[in-house]
Image (cartoon, rainbow, N blue to C red):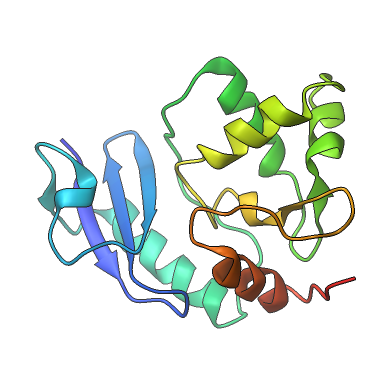
Length: 160
Protein backbone atom coordinates (compact mmCIF):
# COMPACT_ATOMS: atom_id res chain seq x y z
CA UNK A 1 0.00 0.00 0.00
CA UNK A 2 1.75 3.19 -1.12
CA UNK A 3 2.05 6.40 0.84
CA UNK A 4 1.31 9.42 -1.32
CA UNK A 5 2.09 13.09 -1.35
CA UNK A 6 0.99 15.85 -3.72
CA UNK A 7 3.31 18.80 -4.29
CA UNK A 8 3.13 21.94 -6.36
CA UNK A 9 5.86 22.54 -8.91
CA UNK A 10 6.61 25.02 -11.69
CA UNK A 11 5.27 22.46 -14.17
CA UNK A 12 2.06 21.72 -12.25
CA UNK A 13 1.02 19.48 -9.38
CA UNK A 14 3.02 16.29 -8.96
CA UNK A 15 1.84 13.18 -7.16
CA UNK A 16 4.50 11.12 -5.42
CA UNK A 17 4.01 7.52 -4.29
CA UNK A 18 6.41 5.44 -2.21
CA UNK A 19 6.44 2.29 -0.14
CA UNK A 20 8.97 0.46 2.00
CA UNK A 21 11.10 -0.25 -1.08
CA UNK A 22 11.44 3.34 -2.25
CA UNK A 23 9.91 5.95 -4.53
CA UNK A 24 7.53 4.17 -6.90
CA UNK A 25 5.85 6.85 -8.95
CA UNK A 26 5.75 10.50 -9.91
CA UNK A 27 2.49 11.51 -11.55
CA UNK A 28 2.11 14.68 -13.64
CA UNK A 29 -1.06 16.75 -13.26
CA UNK A 30 -1.99 14.91 -10.05
CA UNK A 31 -5.50 15.76 -8.86
CA UNK A 32 -6.06 16.69 -5.23
CA UNK A 33 -7.56 13.28 -4.44
CA UNK A 34 -5.80 9.93 -4.52
CA UNK A 35 -7.46 8.65 -7.71
CA UNK A 36 -4.12 8.82 -9.56
CA UNK A 37 -2.41 6.57 -7.00
CA UNK A 38 -4.66 3.51 -7.23
CA UNK A 39 -6.40 1.24 -4.77
CA UNK A 40 -5.16 1.22 -1.21
CA UNK A 41 -3.18 4.44 -1.47
CA UNK A 42 -3.12 6.74 1.51
CA UNK A 43 -1.77 10.16 2.29
CA UNK A 44 1.49 9.73 4.11
CA UNK A 45 4.56 11.56 5.13
CA UNK A 46 7.15 8.81 4.85
CA UNK A 47 10.81 9.70 4.97
CA UNK A 48 11.20 8.82 1.28
CA UNK A 49 8.36 11.15 0.30
CA UNK A 50 9.75 14.00 2.40
CA UNK A 51 13.22 13.54 0.91
CA UNK A 52 11.71 13.41 -2.58
CA UNK A 53 9.80 16.64 -1.94
CA UNK A 54 12.93 18.41 -0.64
CA UNK A 55 15.04 17.20 -3.55
CA UNK A 56 12.44 18.10 -6.18
CA UNK A 57 12.08 21.59 -4.67
CA UNK A 58 15.88 22.00 -4.74
CA UNK A 59 15.96 20.76 -8.34
CA UNK A 60 13.31 23.25 -9.46
CA UNK A 61 15.21 26.03 -7.67
CA UNK A 62 18.38 25.08 -9.57
CA UNK A 63 20.19 23.92 -6.42
CA UNK A 64 20.22 20.16 -7.16
CA UNK A 65 21.65 18.37 -10.15
CA UNK A 66 21.47 14.74 -9.04
CA UNK A 67 18.83 12.98 -6.97
CA UNK A 68 19.74 10.67 -4.11
CA UNK A 69 16.64 8.64 -3.33
CA UNK A 70 15.79 4.96 -3.00
CA UNK A 71 13.92 4.11 -6.20
CA UNK A 72 11.60 1.17 -6.77
CA UNK A 73 10.03 1.50 -10.22
CA UNK A 74 7.98 -1.46 -11.41
CA UNK A 75 8.59 -2.58 -14.97
CA UNK A 76 9.92 -5.29 -17.26
CA UNK A 77 13.61 -6.16 -17.31
CA UNK A 78 13.99 -4.21 -20.58
CA UNK A 79 12.20 -1.15 -19.18
CA UNK A 80 14.37 -1.19 -16.06
CA UNK A 81 17.46 -1.43 -18.28
CA UNK A 82 16.33 1.64 -20.23
CA UNK A 83 15.49 3.52 -17.02
CA UNK A 84 18.93 2.69 -15.60
CA UNK A 85 20.49 4.14 -18.76
CA UNK A 86 18.34 7.26 -18.44
CA UNK A 87 19.69 7.76 -14.95
CA UNK A 88 23.23 8.02 -16.36
CA UNK A 89 22.45 11.00 -18.61
CA UNK A 90 24.13 13.92 -16.84
CA UNK A 91 22.28 17.06 -15.83
CA UNK A 92 22.18 19.53 -18.72
CA UNK A 93 22.87 16.91 -21.42
CA UNK A 94 20.56 15.12 -23.83
CA UNK A 95 20.60 11.88 -25.77
CA UNK A 96 18.59 10.65 -28.73
CA UNK A 97 16.55 7.45 -28.58
CA UNK A 98 19.10 5.85 -30.92
CA UNK A 99 21.99 6.87 -28.68
CA UNK A 100 20.17 5.44 -25.67
CA UNK A 101 19.51 2.18 -27.56
CA UNK A 102 23.20 1.91 -28.44
CA UNK A 103 24.17 2.63 -24.83
CA UNK A 104 22.23 -0.44 -23.64
CA UNK A 105 23.72 -2.61 -26.39
CA UNK A 106 20.56 -2.73 -28.50
CA UNK A 107 21.38 -0.42 -31.44
CA UNK A 108 18.29 -1.06 -33.61
CA UNK A 109 15.78 -0.72 -30.81
CA UNK A 110 15.22 3.04 -30.73
CA UNK A 111 11.44 2.59 -30.93
CA UNK A 112 11.38 0.07 -28.08
CA UNK A 113 13.59 2.41 -26.06
CA UNK A 114 11.11 5.21 -26.80
CA UNK A 115 8.24 3.07 -25.57
CA UNK A 116 10.11 2.18 -22.36
CA UNK A 117 11.03 5.83 -21.92
CA UNK A 118 7.35 6.74 -22.19
CA UNK A 119 6.49 4.28 -19.43
CA UNK A 120 9.06 5.67 -16.98
CA UNK A 121 7.17 5.88 -13.66
CA UNK A 122 9.69 8.30 -12.14
CA UNK A 123 10.01 11.25 -14.54
CA UNK A 124 12.33 14.07 -13.53
CA UNK A 125 14.17 11.87 -11.01
CA UNK A 126 14.88 9.31 -13.76
CA UNK A 127 15.40 11.99 -16.42
CA UNK A 128 13.38 10.85 -19.42
CA UNK A 129 13.03 14.54 -20.32
CA UNK A 130 16.69 14.44 -21.42
CA UNK A 131 15.84 12.22 -24.38
CA UNK A 132 15.13 14.13 -27.58
CA UNK A 133 14.73 13.36 -31.26
CA UNK A 134 17.80 12.55 -33.37
CA UNK A 135 17.37 15.92 -35.09
CA UNK A 136 17.40 17.76 -31.75
CA UNK A 137 13.64 18.25 -31.64
CA UNK A 138 11.53 17.80 -28.56
CA UNK A 139 9.48 14.64 -28.67
CA UNK A 140 6.62 13.30 -26.56
CA UNK A 141 6.62 13.66 -22.80
CA UNK A 142 4.05 12.55 -20.24
CA UNK A 143 3.99 15.99 -18.65
CA UNK A 144 3.58 17.70 -22.02
CA UNK A 145 6.15 19.38 -24.25
CA UNK A 146 6.01 22.73 -22.38
CA UNK A 147 7.01 20.89 -19.19
CA UNK A 148 9.80 19.07 -21.02
CA UNK A 149 11.06 22.36 -22.43
CA UNK A 150 10.93 23.92 -18.93
CA UNK A 151 12.96 21.06 -17.41
CA UNK A 152 15.56 21.15 -20.17
CA UNK A 153 15.87 24.93 -20.01
CA UNK A 154 16.24 24.73 -16.23
CA UNK A 155 19.27 22.52 -16.97
CA UNK A 156 20.70 24.98 -19.50
CA UNK A 157 19.48 23.36 -22.72
CA UNK A 158 19.03 25.59 -25.73
CA UNK A 159 16.97 24.50 -28.73
CA UNK A 160 18.96 23.88 -31.89
